[in-house]
Image 1: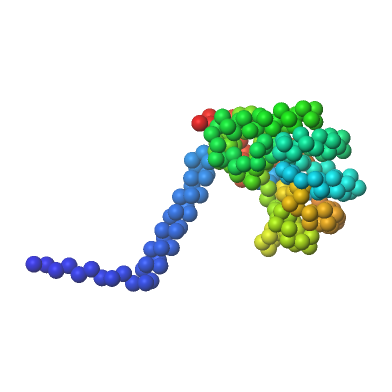
Image 2: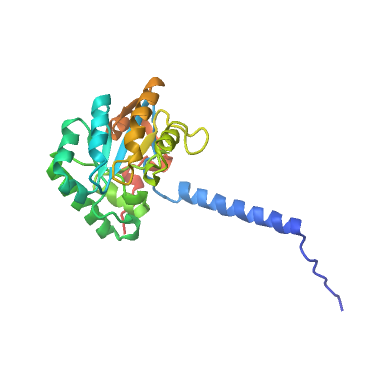
Length: 263
């Protein structure tokens, strides 16, 4: 009778197999993103000018939005404000001021909930409800949306696209909502959360003008002046996209034929 002896795998082999498994899983995830029709929001744009998109989210609060508008007016800067419709309905005079002073209005949804937890019809209702409120207040067409908490999936993006929206994310995060202090907010934008990640041409900067981000009021003038000194201009997202030859990541360059109907 032949006796088969199984050798116990060495620690080295176990580690190597573990690394191989990790690489295969990572490759599969990347391949899925690129080749299986996974959709992405717009994080940044490719532009030939030193333009940067400046954005603010507002979903609640009474104290922060007006001082930020004062700073932008003093600096002669226009930005995109992504507004939740309940806040906008409660602060119609401030929203109208935004429009009169040349700012762009985008949607931040209706209820501040993760849209990727909803069905397609619910997503459509959230977007349409917000659109009706914002357009009634502003008298302007609203066709940009930043989803609450930045949450998305294929269903969210395809539904928004079907309604004529472009979904906007960000490439530079101020993390102002964490209240890290004005100096940290400034550093996050100018130098990046990671080394070499500071704002540059084509980037989209995320700030908040909700009361969750009081540091923004003190940080914003320095950010504006520092970026200007480097030759950058800060503009609304609509203008940034007009200047763009493409958007990043590649999956955000949506064409009609690339959008599958939402289920």
